[in-house]
Length: 359
Length: 79
Image (cartoon, rainbow over all chains, first blue to last red; front, side, top):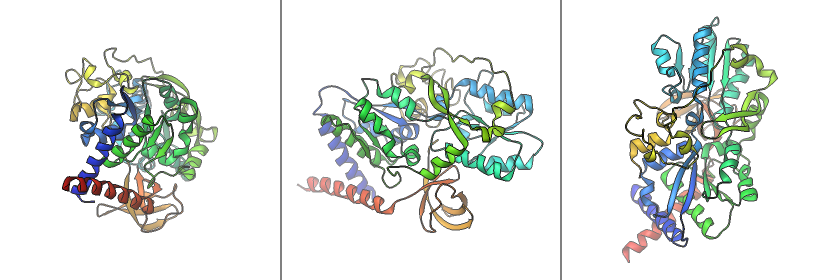
């Protein structure tokens, strides 16, 4: 499509959204679950297309944002005590812990390596067999199979100094908590998480909560199309799960990827910033992979790590506040000097508001 | 963090490994999660892994829908 066609398609979708929204007297509130959607929506200025009664709030699908401060502390304590190399995706590096971030730990001489793929950590481990190499396991269903596949490879290659510190999260348990909120009318469902778990896996939103959901791609037109379908379902009072990202997402997802995860991990409880402990929302290594568990093999005492009580990240992650309501936003808390993780992550809601403005 | 981009598979280099064209540069990709992939397929690549294969038929259906919507608006402007 040329830019002219794209802009005409956007106008047509925006008009459809306005016409449908006009049929509803009250406010329409939807949640974009995924942080990559949050960033795409702000970057394309999509909120300027929305009618006044349509509000889109951000959800918990930003892995860095929902990871607790204590996890950063845990990683740094392992690095210090065992002289381990900490391997991570770049997004995590500036998140403040109780005694600094991974970036400050590195500036003080700690070994922290940023990688593109978890597989890269196996090369790092092989190059320094006497030193533990610890991959910081943060992420949702899109990322989890890549770490599971890395663990399978490590086992096959007999790499003994490689470990994972798991803080993985799965999306269904928090969605069930959020779907019960009466002021949320439906969900813009994550594209790449759904590529793994499949669009059929959200059926409970309809059967248990009578809420519509649309799986969306990441182009601005994909997002507008998905919103149009959400608003239309609300108007018709019909709750269904639609898949508007069929070029990538199958109804049953990617069963091969899920089998790899299943072999390596089992469900466990996990603690979420903003939502607390949700049973069965995390993953732990199975017994057959326990030798790679950094928690077991590189034990440290990790004290409790309370968040700055003024930081609204928790309320923002559950869609009950927007960043402009936070007293720290843009003053004490900026991407250069972040107080909370919602400002650190490239897909955090506060970072998106800071970079592109509230609209 | 769930960013994933389409890249074309240009080479199969071993069991479960291949190379994709990433903006003119050939990059290694793991095919562990998409065992039935063929050279020429577009993969959705995340963190060094192909996590899915782009369905070109569905991609065309989407384009047709968007073109139809664009035309509807173009027609109105002329009226």
